[in-house]
Image (cartoon, rainbow, N blue to C red; front, side):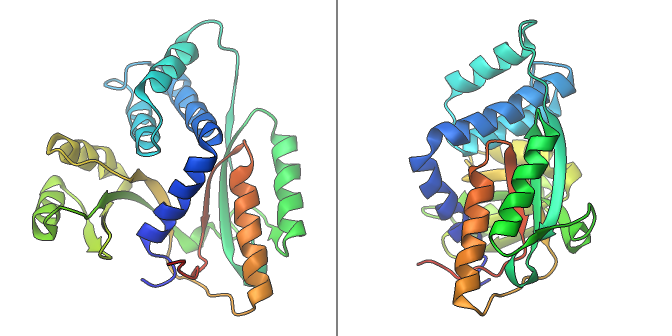
Length: 245
């Protein structure tokens, strides 16, 4: 899986997390707060969306104290923040398909920002549905391979209800149907596994390479700028990104 190995993507995220922990924590906090309000409960046992958001936050190294504080604040009457989940779709340089998931309290600001970013870096924001058909939602769980037996992890994952299992040497990638994601994650957690990434992702059916080095730089800048925006929760794309070993 050259160019889009899971471990390279995770390492990239981890490196950013080290330098931008506050921003990552803010994004995770917003996701947890929305899950509390929309799920109607501050108890993860009774709110599967909250349970998923907590698991994602933990995989992003958000401390338990932070998570509990966010949940209490979101459940309190004094919390007036209201965020809307909106998805934007567009094209990066060389026609790379990009999906941007946001949680925003001002859709005009967010749309304006995203349009500016796409224009600035050689792409364009499109209509809803323009690239969404190129992706499938899948539950993806990533476990660091070091010290683990691949056959045993695969056996446990498939026994838990996973749809697929893959290894790129550094990380085991477990794929589930979105509806089975929480149950598979809970089963593996109960067996003692921890995850370096755990969320429902939008996985492209096909990947596209960029031949022009200048456009590679523009695509990197577009992704970095999108991910740096406070309203942006996730960015999915079908770029066959060069490995950075």
